[in-house]
Length: 316
Image 1 (cartoon, rainbow, N blue to C red):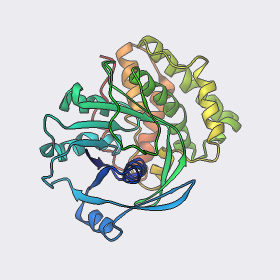
Image 2 (cartoon, rainbow, N blue to C red; image 1 turned 180 degrees about the vertical axis):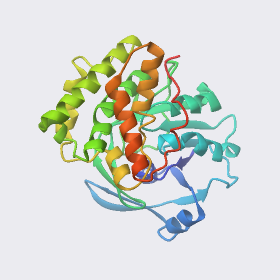
Image 3 (cartoon, rainbow, N blue to C red; image 1 turned 30 degrees about the horizontal axis):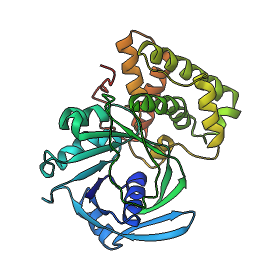
Image 4 (tube, one colour; image 1 turned 90 degrees about the vertical axis):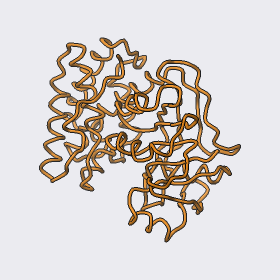
């Protein structure tokens, strides 16, 4: 089976390199002729991990290429998900399969509504990766990728080759897994973006910790109302554990702000605020964080493609 990867960010390049090393057939879809030319001058992706640096030769095309897609990995930014899927829709058929692997929530349901539940797998990863340069990915932290379906039917893991270097897990409760990851992202990402700080400062600066506590309390109230089980203990304890474990890291949202890129605030805090509205729960601290990140983007001249659309609920 040939893998087509749409989204050449850190996770897309990590999967492309690992699939190539495992002997799978894989190619990237790039967004512009300029980006394609940049890739073709390299001819592949460089993977930097515990074993050193490995060059993984790959092919790449533009979305308009007519080659049929057998297995699509959709790992663009969440706000680009719908447009990205439409750009390759002509290449999909009834037998094509889609794995959605993105931050936040809302884009998963969009893919299911477009392609049908039977054709779509949903993933959530704890692998850590970042781009050192275009098409040069550092595998910074080994985790796992949970894969499942929203209707809780059994999901067969995709064929990634016999020696795939990433850990995959069947997850019959993938929606809960996504909510748990969303909870951590809602607690950490907006605050680091607004305060311009490393993750660890949310645990060491008292004012930041109080802000994190308030966001967590509101999130827990919404999760209870929507019937979503989170963690065995308080969300704040889990969030602070992540904060301390990743103390020197800059969140992806802060990095997006610093690089003048749209953030995924609409698919993270925006989704939570929409779920709160549907549940009739007031979340003033999360609403304030949402508006403040939107204002921060506006002040920096960053135009978010998602501010005009309400995130879709995944609980209905």
